[in-house]
Image 1 (cartoon, helix red, strand yellow):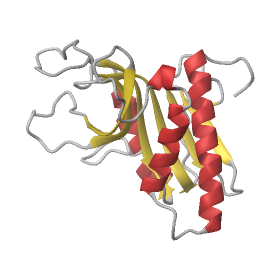
Image 2 (tube, rainbow, N blue to C red):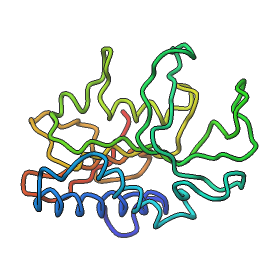
Image 3 (cartoon, rainbow, N blue to C red):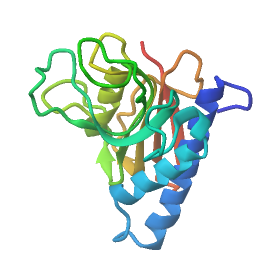
Image 4 (cartoon, one colour):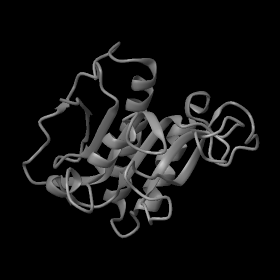
Length: 204
């Protein structure tokens, strides 16, 4: 991403993901057996907390203020899912928890929130990571749904899909671009040359 491109939040998210991938490379090279998704989640949260004024902190001591907070494994229900179904959680979110209420639900918070992040820390194929139909959607498709205003019980202003490992295969989504203009989703992974790779997902 070129200097000066994108919004302030896009630039901050880009830095968070880039630094997280750089640390992932160091630890994966040091000892592959120690490397795990839990460790990667911790790294990403710490990097997000560097911008606490934007995305908040994990386990904030002021749950009722109007600032966003970071949570792990936040429940998300798609548009056509019944309220009692076993829907998958989002790995990391930045959400509001003050006394604004979700429409039709007696819970504190607001429907429109700041950030949703889906993580992996193992080798995965592009076909699986970007699976767009069927029962088990890929992370990229899931995060695309999270930023749509009409899709679920929550909506997010920005999303990130990050793999602290390599992605196999040659079927890279054609929607990936270096230009953040009009994009809400950042995709990051580790290249075959052990370098951080970051692209924005441009909706067609």
